[in-house]
Every structure is written in structure tokens, then in C-alpha cells.
Length: 144
Image 1: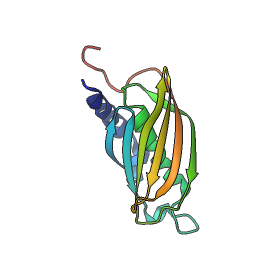
Image 2: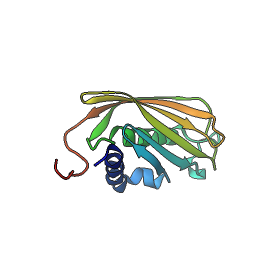
Image 3: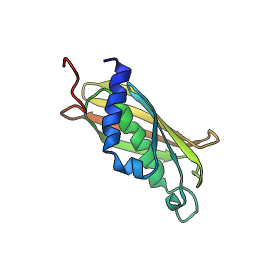
Image 4: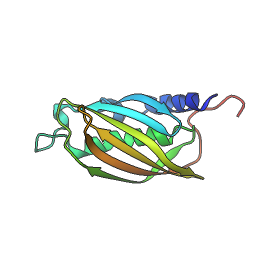
């Protein structure tokens, strides 16, 4: 199995049980070893009292991209620490894109950066996640 195939299969298994991302209307656009792209269109029910995207939804989108990227090696990984900086507001009706990339991975720990952009390409948020590998895999690999 190639690293790309492993990443796709891990994502398929994770996506099947990720009811929160599915309920928010997220879509997994791309995944590979140490990277993932997830999109979400901001709905009216995601607006805060200012009429813009509630920051929690932007965080959830970034966190989902982070999760798919750090779990892309068929190892089970959880978040150890996350932080986000909001740069510009997301607007209702706009599709946001979160692109996660691996910044560092060694042993059981990893660091991933996620850039969330709006429909016009402007940066909406910058997210950094630290991951920690736990026991188990997402699926059984032949010959493993």
C-alpha cells in the first residue's frame, strides 16, 4: 500500500464515524501523508451575534483538517494542544477552505499548521495543532 493510499483509507475510516464534521457540512477534498484539505460553507445557523461566522465553526473546520492530516499514517492520533488566531471574519454563504500541513513529526508527536481561507482567498485564521499518537490503527493492513 502506498503512503497516499494509506492516507486515503485512514481518512475514509475516520470520516465514516465523524458525525460532527458531517453535520457541519464539511467535505474532505484532499488527503495525503501529513496533509489534508477540508471545506465548509458557512450557513445562517453558524452566524454569531455580529452576523459573521461563529469562531467555533472556524476552529472546528481547522481542527478537522488537522485531524485528517495527523491521522494519515494509519496511526491513531489525538490533539495534545491547539491554538488559533482569527484574522478576518468568515461570512455566511462563503465556502471556507482549511489546508493542513505537517510542520514536524517525530516519535509519537507531531506539529501541524492549518491555514483557513475564505472564498476570495483571504486568510481567515491560522491554526497550529500538536498531536500525540495513541495505541491502535484505523484499519488492518495486509501483511502487517
